[in-house]
Image (tube, rainbow, N blue to C red; front, side, top):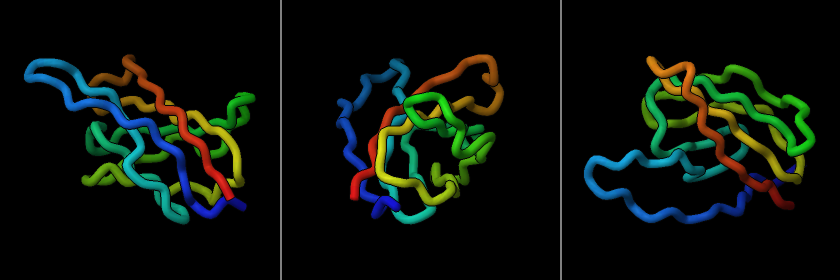
Length: 97
């Protein structure tokens, strides 16, 4: 099992009027905290080979998602925000030992 450490890419702050991409703020135990996502966004997590490990999870008011404990490896989070369900964004993250 992974320790909950994640390698994250930093993104610059957006200028006024620009859309900001979601990103991982923190991964600790069974909580994945995402930045720049709407409340109650639907999040699905997959391995890089496409195997689902968490499906249609919901973000809380602070962007935190309860997830299954993840083994070390690379993952993809697909995010669908509230009213814009047709619009999907992705975040890649790595869990290391």
